[in-house]
Image (cartoon, rainbow, N blue to C red; front, top):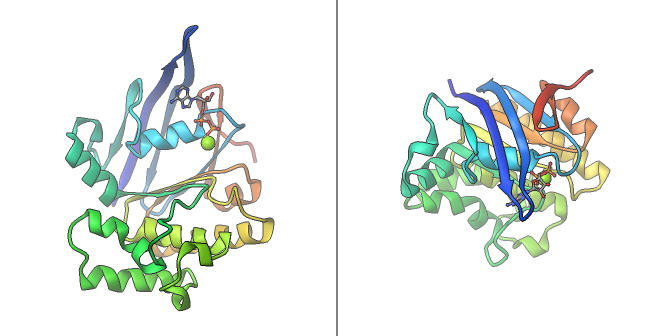
Length: 226
Ligand SMILES: Nc1ncnc2c1ncn2[C@@H]1O[C@H](COP(=O)(O)OP(=O)(O)O)[C@@H](O)[C@H]1O
Ligand SMILES: [Mg+2]
């Protein structure tokens, strides 16, 4: 069963004047099937924390272990493979490829992992069905609404059966009703796939759907008061 350990993560950025400390000491753990919301004001380091957990950025100190493995020790090709196979990302903006169809967009991570097999095409179709877009396989992102694009982004994030799904303000660009539907869909997919789900959000409603809630405040993570 997948296990994520975030241990004493600190991150500072050098600036012209001095160093900007974004994260001071962030620790938490989560196991497969658990969901965690992280809230906090703009600029509090939420995206930085997700980027570090997703191996897109290095911490200044501390470490992240997935099933006991610290990906910081991997060389670049192995790190890219690790990220592709074990981590799913959903961003505020969908980041879909405009020239590709819905089906092709969902298959992109499997191409990076090697040849696209009949099995991955089957899983892509099934995921697209589950996010309610089975009738839109050949459509391009420009032909979809914001909520539909985010549904495609969810299917793409899950195609490689990641151990961890990282969602950074996944409903931030959507109207309230659409955001509510995406939140429910995220939860349903989490229930089915049983990955570790980490969601950064401004939405109290979305945060409230997760089993655990933390607030990022002054570079540390605190349990959010109910
Ligand atoms: N590459 C960078 N270089 C310098 N400062 C950065 C960099 N990335 C983020 N920051 C700063 O770190 C702080 C936290 O940013 P971020 O993690 O994006 O916050 P949030 O997602 O909570 O809004 C901000 O003050 C931001 O300006
Ligand atoms: Mg952010």
